[in-house]
Image 1: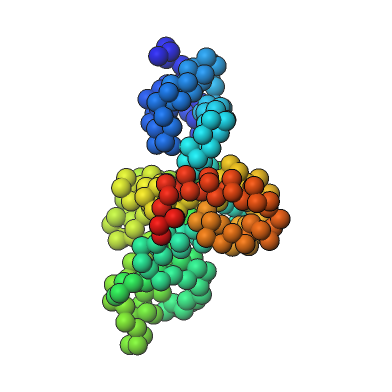
Image 2: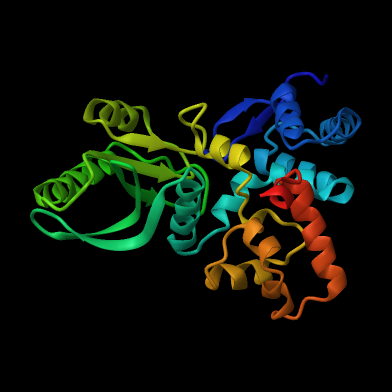
Length: 284
């Protein structure tokens, strides 16, 4: 282990380099112990005071990619979610898939009448007597937390829509909830307000066992932007066509065929997806 070295986070804050944190992230990416030790050793050779966490991440990613592409894909998951842009719609579509995986019927980008005015709801997710009105706050860069103004604003919109739904006697739903999903973080004030108001918040790492990161890894609904076997342009083309999941490409090979992918590349991409999803898609 190297002596303490200060590294610079995305926010500009200087913190001690944490070898154990890097090891955990590599282990979570399914890298084996030998590869983890090799990457740690290579990174520690280049450490210097003030090195950015981005530089450390980039080097670890390159080393992973050269040895085990699916591990590199898992390792870049947070960045891959930020690459769903530039608009927020692919992220909204992605969140719709997460709710559908849990058995909800969903609509994305639906206009709903409130008691006072109309609202565009990012995701409407319903099951049994439950109806969730979901707002998605997408950011394409790190270091931008969602402050208390976000749940304050969303809570008022939710209440307006909820009042209208409750006034509709033909409506079968009795349990309404407002949700906010983000790919970054919430401030402590935002979390406190949401708890008091009854809003459900989901950020990259909050709440711990129901966070966005946890839900993606548990469901294995990986976005196409994690794939190292697709170019940036190819990923963007699929996103523009409304394709956001690796699973969608695997289950519809014609998506690759019609875009001119060779049989060899299709085989390689499918192998990466199968390894990434740990063979789940072959039995779904």
